[in-house]
Image 1 (cartoon, each protein chain N blue to C red):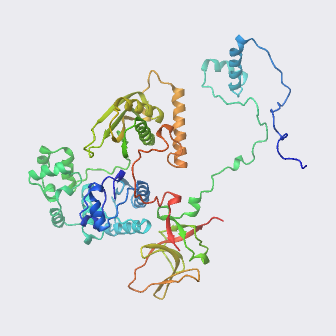
Image 2 (spheres, each protein chain N blue to C red):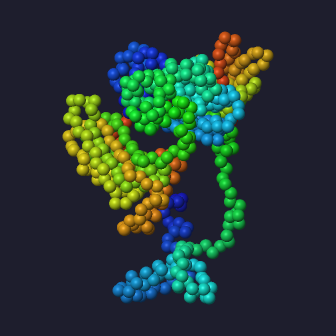
Image 3 (cartoon, each protein chain N blue to C red):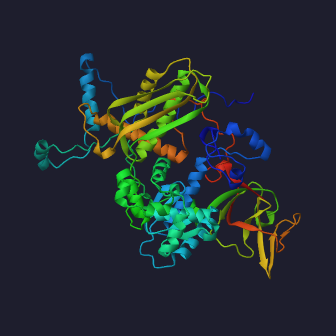
Length: 192
Length: 394
């Protein structure tokens, strides 16, 4: 019969061992509260020791005590983190990915006409309306009351919206047709 | 666009106006008309409006050293000392707001706030201005000509009551009011209306208020989605509203010393027995603690609640506000407890700010909230909720 993985002893289980041997002390029940109070006081007493010469002054001046919490056990008397000096701010994606905050919108993609440009169904787009749409940029355009994402073509008076998937047709515009460029796509967010 | 709780029309498109949809008209009375002309009614989505408003205000604020945000969709910019063609400047601002946010805005320019407001009215109503109207550069007779064609009720600060009173004095147009004698006006109206007259004459008396003065009282009240009869539901509502109100209180760093709670049945449901009651409770000491305020609110609610009525609305008002730093010391002040509540409130506020509204809330506010108002046809929060982003076809 193969050995089961169930039950038995786990490493590190059970009561924590003290760092050194411990001893039990008996105290009268009536004094317990007083003694515990004293212990608690010592635990939270100022960790900073003043030079002896200053101590008489302290008694008369009564400065506001600065209690520095001291853990009674599990003090890590280790090496301070060498990285402490290098702690700076964290990366802020808003700052990195957004150029014009007030003009930036997020849109969710439905469809497959732009897979050649790396834009897939379900991706999120960062769209900046403050950027001028130029030839060859990927744009969001309003066509027939619907937003669509395509590559913007504008050469020699010809305006087209190009799909990046051979199975989808390009959208060409005649003079009388109106096309509104809604914004310029600057980034694609995708889950992988 | 319908009011909170899908009650009545609060904003209408040009087409809806033409079809006869009136401002403030209850939606249920318009069902037939709506069906006939396929009118679309949307619930208000203040989250979306607030986000778009913030975007617009930030862009506008970049065009002037001083800005007064007057309401969700209006602000004043100071153009003092601008040595440019102000109309062209206005057009540039307008273009940028339209391009960046898609919002169409109109700009009114004038030597006083009252005239700027009036200019804005013209820019909005008369297409020939192309959205920007500068009254400051017009010669006197042209300006008067324009003012003569504006009804006096359109002047900023002239409400219905003042308008009716002015009409009795023979003042019917903006020009009439401008040419009225200030002392004469003072005989019938308050100094506020006198100021309006002088502002129409081009004397700037109203300053730009860049810092919104702290509110003197904070109210939070909503109509219920369905009639409420149980005390337990009212208690949930009061705690929810108190939570909102206390958040606002802390945001403006104030404390409050009195709390008003009210409940009422619906005057529109005439067959129902009617009851409406409110109670103001004074607090032993000023506070901004949601827990204490909620307790006080519930105490008040218990005293005004009568069973057997179908309640339609409840609300709370925080009153007697004072800035946190001016708090009066009290004989029974407990500094340690005060500090820990302050920390607790700060913690809750910052969690809710980071993780979303009501990430942490009082259990008493309820999980289900059967009483919560209807927002049957709300547009998605396109710009503030990741799960509600607008879809782009591809």
